[in-house]
Image 1 (tube, one colour):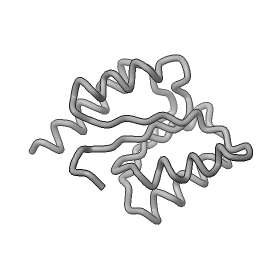
Image 2 (cartoon, helix red, strand yellow; image 1 turned 60 degrees about the vertical axis):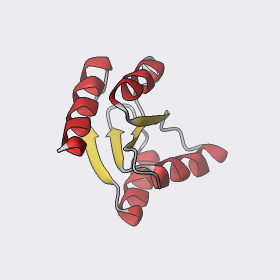
Image 3 (cartoon, one colour; image 1 turned 180 degrees about the vertical axis):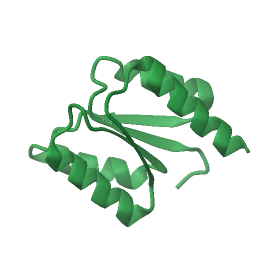
Length: 106
């Protein structure tokens, strides 16, 4: 894994996913988004996404129980830090990413 911070947002960010990725780029953080659906191949994509992440931001307000369980288990297996939030819009994402970027710089 590269030294660049890699953050995965899972669920609840469909309307702002491009903005969250752009925010990450501004802060030097690689950001990926998964909508939290676990049908067919999306389960494998979710597992792979969490496996690549240093930090998992799990949005529980709109996520399926299956996606939450899969993401948490994979984060525990890989040692990714888990941040759980009920909802996540642009402002919340900016605050989280800024906090992570400053923590990484310290």
